[in-house]
Image (spheres, rainbow, N blue to C red):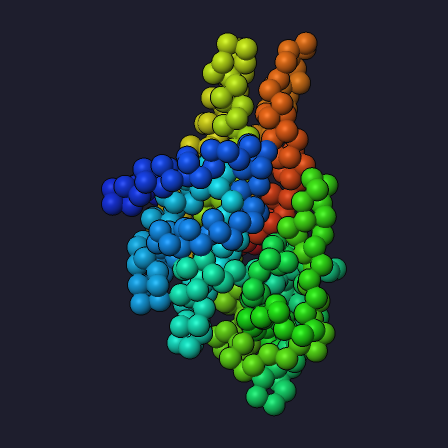
Length: 385
């Protein structure tokens, strides 16, 4: 059975869908004064107080067990909330990675002491995590990791470098994929995951300013960083298995569909006015919606697999690859529509939002795995290689 025919239509249960209205009411007020070009940065936006407010409302860690401060709800509940966060352009970057994948990873592979230490703080919006996977010169080839943690007394000594690490400058911890034995040419063997306190001596974080003027990407350097023995997550040498499971969390959610949604909504709002309405633009809107609707259905079907306790690695890669293609199509199509209107005034906020998304869009098909890597995974899942 292939990945393609295991994604059957699914529906969000009524008890989870009921979350949508209170979340919308809160977000409508919380984001009312934030201009669209700022809201378009949604899951790279840094606002720790906003994250703590979500924690107070019980909206962080909603799928995590109640004994660790979570909500004990199904992945469908988180899907509904994330969908609304992204549609409104809420500044969720502070807690995003911790809530989406770091806490679930610790829950699955961590010790009881690690669960007690980190997960309740994630649920309160008090512990922010970043991902330490990519390295300079490695591209998307995670198996060529050179950052190394070597045993030292009752702990580890960490040396190396990570790059493209989202919001590392604002985070408390990194879960890093490191080599604990062997060499880079050993590929998947000898890889492990460790939790790094980014305030430790020997850790240096340098933000990278991009074309849009943002600096949420960072490079992180480790020089003789001393880690305690309990920094290791799971079993030594099992890092590759763990990181592929973690990437399924990263690739399966609605964030791989809605990165351009604030722009799309700003454009649709203009089309609803007499100044912006024209038949060819409305046809284009329908075409884009026809792309989004089946992608959302596929994403919800992946969520159903998570509900059943499965690890939909190939299916998540399929949704991510198709989703980022549509995310990149939206700004290109809107730009064609906007700039084909000779002599017509276009709202400044729409132009500002289009400008930002156009600059950011090339990264959509890089983050979370490049197209080449994802299509290789899909081909293997279909038995084509």
